[in-house]
Image (cartoon, rainbow, N blue to C red):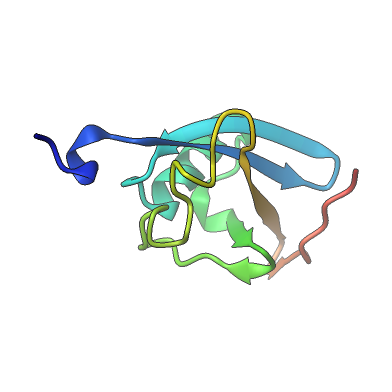
Length: 100
């Protein structure tokens, strides 16, 4: 029998930046840094220029999505979890902004 870590359970995420919405999935065992690489492929902004948030709390890029509370139980295809995204502009990061 495989453990949860070995099964590669996926979480489903909605990444929000101002009026932009990205739907993606990733393994629970992926790090926040790896999620930033996925965003880089879509938004063409390197991970160093990104901050990611869950419930207005900055996510540690060295932690796994599971460690940040994104599990397959709470981030399902029909109810994806929301991740806030802010970018660096010049030398400073913009504030977190999510518009409907």
